[in-house]
Image (cartoon, rainbow, N blue to C red; front, side, top):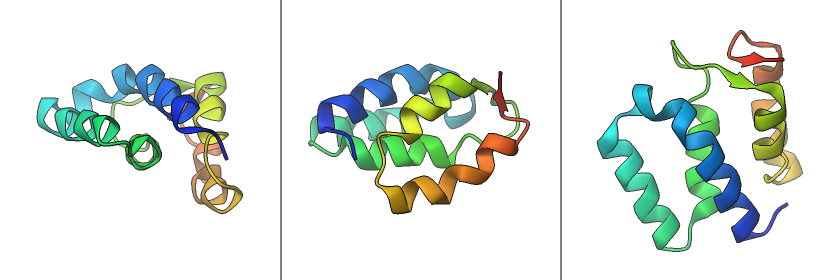
Length: 88
């Protein structure tokens, strides 16, 4: 599992890919979570949103973000590697 700083970095990189489907209000709430010291939860929220229509992230970015999670949580998002939302 990554440090809070690594989780926040992954969150900041992944956020722009999801901004259009999540909307400003949700992103603002997630940013507040970051400010409150909860980057892991904010990153998890973004990862769980990757399967929404209109979202496409690179495999490298997805793996970088997923690698910030605990082994148990990594398994939860493994199926996304085989989805249309994670591309080479």
